[in-house]
Length: 329
Image 1 (tube, rainbow, N blue to C red):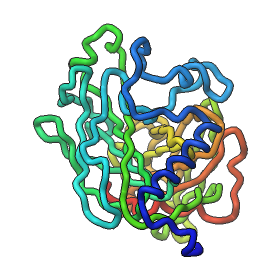
Image 2 (image 1 turned 45 degrees about the vertical axis):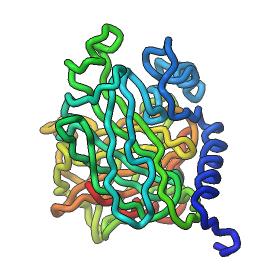
Image 3 (image 1 turned 120 degrees about the vertical axis):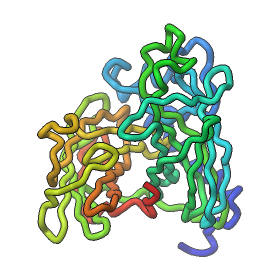
């Protein structure tokens, strides 16, 4: 990139980043500000998410997660809203109920009480982290981001059944919640484009092939096949109780989808092998970035793909590649 076009002050970079995100997000779905939900919406979602879904009703299309900082009676209190790119930091946050109390009782989902995702607004950098919770409900995890710019933090969790906010009749059936908050990394900034659409990815000597497509408002199967040196990998290892974990983020507003493999542990459908099967529904048409975590030979790898919902995920012939610096599992 021409150095004359490089933005060297993060204040300008952040404005450019979120301005672009807003413009794209308007084309694929609502961009929701980080503010508590208004009264009268017991689900904590903006009206658009309840009535719009790529032309489908709310009954057909699941709501997009991570667009709000508050939902279902809980708020994500990010105590570390800024870090410096390239420098180690301690990311700290708390999940609070409507009374401001820190949530300390969680249901374990896939071996963890809470899954933390950090992704850059351009969807090039991705982290799947598992922070530690202190007795007072404060979560923390080491974090070092490679580049300056805007990031989104997603807290994916399920409150325990006896949590205060779930004792309300309106919340007694509440299940998994994903809250999102903005994180800024300061430093010299350079915008990067969304990687091109592809059904192949290469990471650390592994090749991953994606079959299937995302469809707005309609469930569809996605199959991912892992191979190495031209041979299928048939001995994938369980990671967090499953042979693979898939996160989808919508380009623009970073709407969040967390999808787990079809079947249950011990089910033949989830046995180790080269194929990992998922069922997913896109909340709208648009471009998405898929991140697959899989484990082999004792190491976790993350393969990344760019696909389009509402159109064929045609293979561009260029590997989708890996998620930049996707470590910290």
